[in-house]
Amino acid sequence: MALVVQKFGGTSVGSIDRIRNVARRCLAAQREGNDVVVIVSAMSGETNRLLGLAHQVSEVPDAREMDAIAATGEQICAALTAMAIQTEGGKARSLLGHQVRILTDGAFTKARIKTIDGSKIFDTLKKGEIAVVAGFQGVDEHGNITTLGRGGSDTSAVAIAAAIGASACEIFTDVDGVYTTDPNVCPSAKKIARISFEEMLELASLGAKVLQIRSVEIAMKYGVPIHVRTSFSDAPGTWVTGEDKTLEEVVVAGVAYDKNEARVHIVAVDDKPGVVAQLFSAIADKNLSVDMIIQNVTRGDEARTDVTFTVSKTDLQRLKSFIEETAKGLGAREVRYDEDIVKISIVGLGMRSHAGVAAKMFRLLADEQINIQAISTSEIKISCLVAAKYTELAVRALHDGFGLGDRPPVVA
View (cartoon, rainbow, N blue to C red):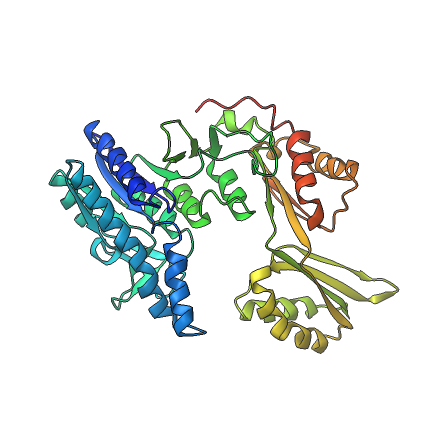
């Protein structure tokens, strides 16, 4: 008998009919001889509705109360799903984060899981019931309800799978797997049968929205295979697993893009030790994350340097509130901002052992007359900053230039 963890996203439980479909899927898995644990998100659109109500009451809602409100979406869906399973002739019990005892830190709206007590889940399974767990939520050491941030139900599912020793975690969503790039941008995009944790982690951090980043981190840490698939058919999806030689043969696994980038250009700070450290220490003190960083000599003045970096557009307004004063204190002439940019990235384990990947990427962009404004790399990814108007052209050029549309699927 296998221990199966299945997670269903908001679109998969977006209506009563879809919840009934989820119930039938869960029962089918149980009737195959499995113990079944189900993690559900809130019904599609419900979390936004709840948070909208909070903002109608308060312009800046209290974070603790926001979590208490937001968590009810998953609570409702878990109860409805359990009821649907019961209506279909099965046995089920809904469990909330504090009942399972998903213990988190106290960072409201973006809590991180510390421990999970699986005893309540096992007690439920021993009774022949399907355990339906509300995703996205936990409880801190003071008994306060906490939530795990957007996409947190993915994190709940993988963490629970790791805690109870499940052989895999199935993530059911509205897409049928992970693609080589966004099919809406590149018609030649292909579904990937199998991808490594590291590649998926890079793609998720670079703009691919199939899986939440923290869920992949947990899966990689505890070795939990993830099967990303659609809840609207029985077709196999994409397996996210550990590395093997087959995966390393693929030089580039996928192309990602992120439009949530803004460039900050600080002109002519003093070029001496400690200046850049002061600048980025001030940014870190505000809990803001910086992505690409470039430093070069100021044109016409070798005693000064320009510093360019990127932040998320959602953080730009917070940055503007103090960065100009900070830059002025470091002797800068001015600070410029550019939100009309996009980060285009290629990811692949094969980059470790194949030379010339970066040169080919730059050549493919140059052939389309796309100017590169910044570059960052890791062992298995290369990212370029380009003007936003070139997003689709750049994605297609790189995707087809590296032969991803023609690549035969790797057999899982």
